[in-house]
Length: 358
Image 1 (spheres, rainbow, N blue to C red):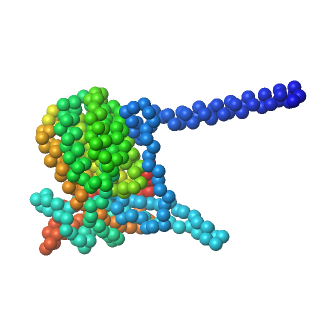
Image 2 (spheres, one colour):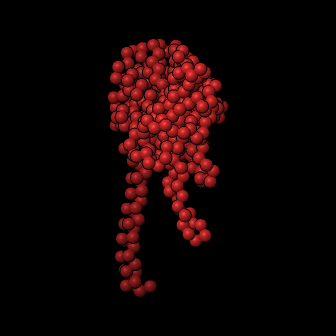
Image 3 (tube, rainbow, N blue to C red):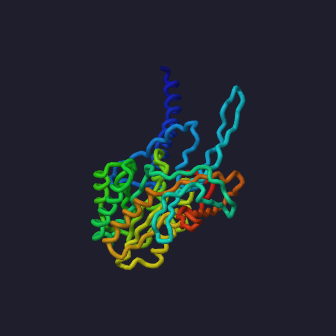
């Protein structure tokens, strides 16, 4: 090779090498973003397990068991004999509803005609109706701050009793949180693995409750196999560390396919009024319930009640049409029992349309 040719190649390689190195450093920086509040790191230093792979969409109609909110599929273009045909699936709102009588007992024998649904005050036609026990994706989110140290034994046992009382095909993950939420067990139906994760206790640090709720809700959406989703949050204090605000957390729970949130606030050491109200607001916005036992001995019966609640819900589906706007859509569901007696219905009270899954 001529000396001049070698010199030219050396000069050409230098900028290419710089570009390659720059691309590598950029990729590393993007992959290791410590400020992303939507991620759930594992407790170890190893990379977190990847989310389950999304299956390729099929041509089957959308399932009638999506949890709350509006399932909007993007406009798709397909080639039909050399021509592009644009197709848009019908918008669909799916609600999971619990019905109780005036004594608080569940009512599980109603038919479709017993229910009425309005959105922004306008009556909607129920397009599908189900009442059956289906597998659920569940996120267990437990406060791991210092004040919980002496409570975790009974709390863990109560959570295990909920898991054992649930559908054997449920998939559950465990997050322990203080200042940072840790994914100590990803989705599984193995009770032994979940029990081990519940005992990953450090009991120190502050309480970033809203960050943990938002990150856990995001992780819950990464389970493509089970469309009905539930979060159980247990804490004895109020948020004092999150980057997310209460209103941020509520809004993100109310986007498409948000989970139903149940909360247990341990008040034996005097949870503040604002802490109680925050848990109530989080739960009520999703159709869930916040419980405030006065002692640890009540927690086990509460988790069993939550398990029964999840198993006895109705699923209602309706299509609100394309001209609903972009703001918050308020939902009201009513039910009538025999002889037109009034029943109480608990479900999500609204949603924000058109917000894609995070």
